[in-house]
Image 1 (cartoon, rainbow, N blue to C red):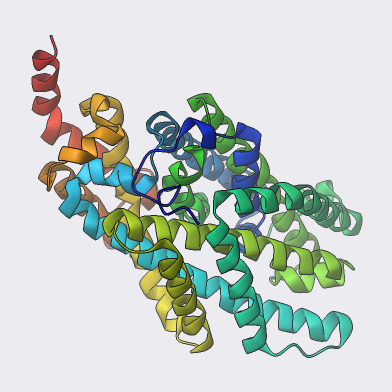
Image 2 (cartoon, helix red, strand yellow):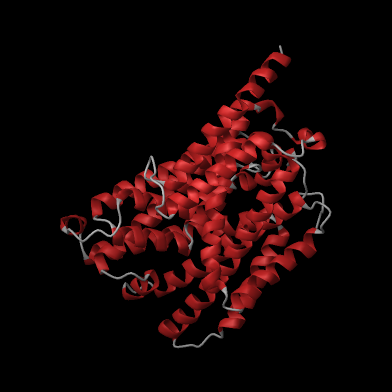
Length: 427
């Protein structure tokens, strides 16, 4: 494997660029994953049908905006999200952020392996009356995902392009089967007890997907023009994600059940359930490990890519097999929350404060710490945690968006003079 290729701390070369639909296929595959189905099911179960529609639309719109902007920045700079974070926060500041990113992504790699082995073992018993050893499933799945990651974006892209049509058909069949049991009119005529507010539903949707939107530059850096990144965000989050969550919500409303795999078995979609679990988990976890490696390489560029990828994969599957992930999920949840304000600082810095520095040459003499960006991120992160616990009120009823807006506004206020100074110096 070429150590100076896509995993290195360099910009993507022109000969590595691919058509944007191939990149959009990778983003779409993430939206086809089991966690997306589960999120749609949970939001649908907590809201009445009309409020579910509003939550899905607004939640997807929020993610599209953030993903499109972050993706376009990645396309124009040809850099991964972790290199962009180095410019935004400085080498020292980015070290903290990128390691936190890598830990979280590696943790979710383990969580998804855990979900995968439990789901496949359960489906094996229910569909074919076959007992699959969970540990063997976890090791085999981790091996396939690690090999895919080692090959790089090309392998993830080929896998995603092949599987997207299959998963689109499965999603269509899920919605069709649900509507054959109960019509849309009958579903909307029901008035279930709501356990969520619309704002909480939007927050659930945004929270489930926003990390992917923030690190979207990891794949959109391969797109030739920034418009391709925008199309990728729209297709991934406003077409595929919306369709997947909507299909899951419909199935839940029609069946009255809360387990997506159980629902699919009841609708005689056992093979479809297998495809979603295996295909979705494969691409999602390959991308999780891929981004974790990028984060570690951005902070420690001298580490060998192959050894790093294998090591991180082994750690992820070991965590899954040790059954420590139930308690670890809470830690990962809060770790994910603190990422959200990163987008506010990076977007403002790249679009308004210092747009001219977002190129690979800046890293040669990059500053050690952008204390203004780090302070804005810290305030936004604390706000996100407190708001998620209900300890402080939110402005938009979406804690994630409040954190992004707060960090962006605060950074603008702190760094505005720097923008003016830069403008004067370039006249």
